[in-house]
Every structure is written in structure tokens, then in C-alpha cells.
Image 1 (tube, rainbow, N blue to C red):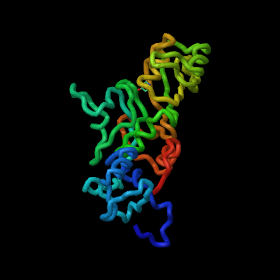
Image 2: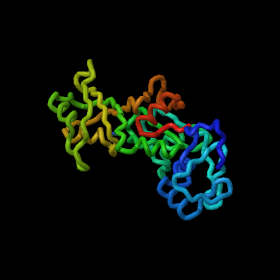
Image 3: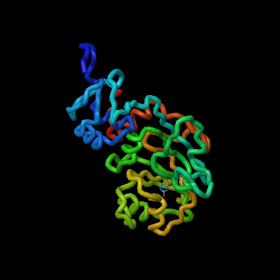
Image 4: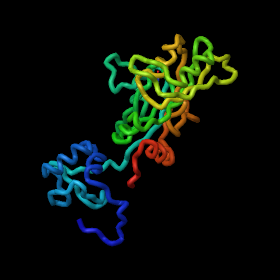
Length: 252
Ligand code: URA
């Protein structure tokens, strides 16, 4: 691949990353494809695993098919209403969050919210972005407002902060505070994990009944200004911050 002198190395991207960004294969599988001689760049079989390409100019073919980057990735936030479910299809015909998104491209929720949980739900068609955000290693903070049936005791708040034992292991330290004027029943919680029904299970493990659960923030993204069921695009700074938090270098 010939480069002009003007070209900055920043615009180049490693072949395995490019192939994974195109949604063709994971990075590891992409390395295998290179080793198997199935990757061609500008008509030549690529041999070097560490090769970098210019996504704007180089033509990459995998197994004879062109790998094209989806330039128009969508990054959305929804203020999820109650009773919408985050599974892709529901055989019982219940409302899915996808049916509330009116975009031409299909997008997928990043993680899950229970049917009865409301609030911030991110959706995207960028698989790598979703994968990074959900990876426990990056500990993206997620904040919830919890309405309890009975007031939270200071001792239980302290236990939740330290971590409580659940069936799938002890929870990591969480931030927990009682929201003023809520008679001790309204609680703010920030967790850095994303286990299934985690917040409900944390409170249930101490004998509390969760009446309402609302996710108010996912990393830097809040639902401010969005009514229930409404969707907006993430702003560039929000996407940049999320990528930084999730250990994704911004190559473009
Ligand atoms: N924790 C829960 O218990 N439910 C959710 O929907 C999200 C986090």
C-alpha cells in the first residue's frame, strides 16, 4: 500500500481492528483469516498480521467479499417506559424497545433493563462499542433511583456500599445515598457492574421490596429532557466520553 508523505499515521488502522469494525469477524478471528490467506488488500493477499490500512482508500476483501465500514453508526439514548421489554423479539407480542425506535437501521439495546425498570437505555448498531460498554472490566457507572416500600436503614446502606452477597457472588462497592425528603424510602445507587436484575437483587437480599426502579444515568448520559419513550442521538462529547471510559481509542 503506497502512502503519500502527507498521510498521518493516525489515519491508519490495523487490519484486524478494521475487519472487526466492519462486523465481519472478531479481531482474533480476523487474525486467523489473515493467516489463512483469506484477506486481500487492493487485490493482494495480505500476509502481515500487523499491517495497517487506510480505511478511506484501501479496498479490503475477506473471503472474496468487500469489507466495508459502516460509516453511519447510530448511538441513541431512550428514556425507557415501563412495560417495554429489551429482548429482540417477543413471542407474546409485547412492546419491545426496538419498536419504539423509528430509525431505518436496526439498533440493539446495550445491556438490559427489566420490563418494569424505566430510564436510560443506550441503543446502537456499533457492535464493538456495545461489547466494550458491557464488558465488566471497564466498570462503567450506572446510576439508579430506587423507590422502596420501607425506609432504608443506615446499617443496610453501609452494607450495600461495601457489597452484599448474592447468588452469583458478592457485589462490588456501590455508592448509596438516601434522597432528601423521601422519608428514607427514596435511594440513589450507583453500581459499576451490570449483572442481571442486580439492583433489585441487592435490595431484596436485605429484605426490601423495590417499588420503582429508574436508571437516571449511564456513564455521562442522562435522560434529562426526554419524556418516557422518547429517543435522541447521543452527542459527540457523550460518545467520546463513553469510548474513553470503555477503553476504545478513537481512530477516526
Ligand atoms: N438492576 C435491576 O435490578 N434491574 C434493571 O433493570 C437494571 C439494574
